[in-house]
Image 1 (tube, rainbow, N blue to C red):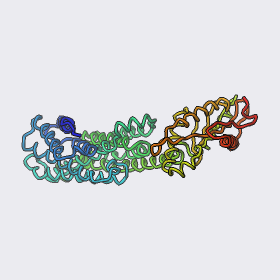
Image 2: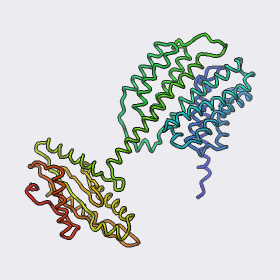
Image 3: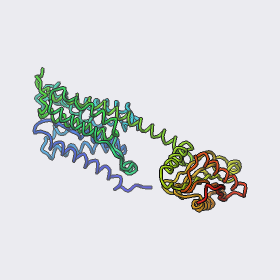
Image 4: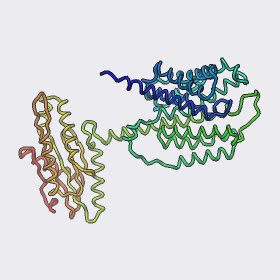
Length: 469
């Protein structure tokens, strides 16, 4: 298939437009004749290229450089500083991208603590490259010493990259957001973080930049890495602006002219967010592990039905709930067994048998309604609990399930493989007390045995007065 030229060029056009817009915004927002207080262009572009590897080509980097150069020239910069300073920015972008792109995807997306530590190292290297390139040609454009120039570039590039890049690397895809649905989150950690930021500015002094750390750690234990990254970006940028505007009375005498407390504050704030980001990664990994373990303990991996232990817990909960209602609701338990399943395994192999189990489970789950339990008890034996229906009424449901299984079109080696099921029912009406789950299982199993003995592919109801309605 030949890809149209327009579709190949579109991502590159978007990359150039994004670079131009970010650079123009950064230039217009910085103080006159001064370096930017906050220059997110390099970090954003490095993150975009890491999330979109196809654009991280020689042509892509050339367009990034061209976009920054055009932004400088249209805002009145001279050719010489525009060419050199944007080369410094490109050096930071390429360095961060080159180091992070070599990591496994889990590390690159900050899903592990190791990935977070690698990100800090990559941001430090990128900042050092940009600062060193700036110092090579600093004399014509800066009145500061080389040390002050290097620290100014390094502190800004490092702090901005550390604050911005985690947001881009942990951001969920639109598909993941749609699949994840809405989740309730606690507002308490967020409110405490906002209060701690306000206290930092009100209290002031060098130590005040550490005030939000406890709240950030609480957020790291409560929220996803993406939300934590957004909060660290908000907290860090707020503190940097507060220090730059002298809102925190952070000024102290300097040993060398041009080396400002803002440089020290930037580096300190950048290092403060390391702890919360690592904790967020560890916490998220633990939540994911617990979710996988809970899923494995609840859902049968082959059929997608409930496991026996999960079925026992939920069925007992339904029985307990029934006893608490007056009048009690009726309830039916079905035992199902695929007919001649051992012969299917023996004649066609276990792979075909597994496929039969999967198709059987999908068919039954499509027929059931919300609130009805479906479980695999073992092998080819399954169970269903239908609350709200006595066995006399549930027998019609069982017949519908039996016909749905009989109509399955399972094929093997070009031939239709017949699949049928035998079903045994037991339960209780609303006017009688419910027996234990073990009793219901035993009664349904006896009814299933009769269905097997009377020719299979049929439904039998447990005998006795319990089922009278």
